[in-house]
Length: 214
Image 1 (tube, rainbow, N blue to C red):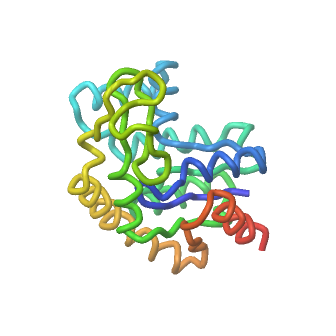
Image 2: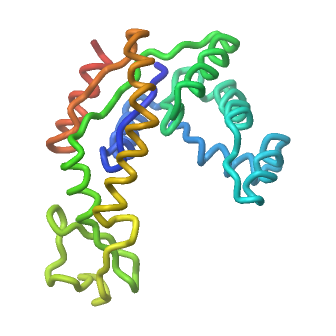
């Protein structure tokens, strides 16, 4: 079973991907992991990616697609995989189609975890981090015993710059601009499955699973 997982920042993709991996015994494939492995192994594509990264430039699609093709051809993908964080744009999705055609594979489901933007802002802007030990809290979902103080070490809790509301809303705007065309792309192919991303982790997973099994 070959899956693509979509969802905005804070939608819970990482949590749900882990549950899918545990149940279906298939690898989760992220471009970040692939890049790190290619750099560590000093592969041809890894060295090419390093040239761009050393200059502070984005790694071009052609290199990323090459890494994806190498990864999907590995034996552990024979029973399926979850693509997480890729594709991000329609050109990447079109390039992925060509790679899959070459490998004799196809995507079974594109799972889009749907969460209202206000809820995502609430989830992300409520995070607090301990300056001393790095422990994470949430003002609504997992607050510390004493406001502003870490339960574990007594350190000061603070809100990271990328967790403030303005930054979070900007991240969501960028995600929507990139991903809306992608959602239309997979909708036209009849592959998109929208899953409500509110409720408990188990509730959301149950919805994902029923979509996959149906």
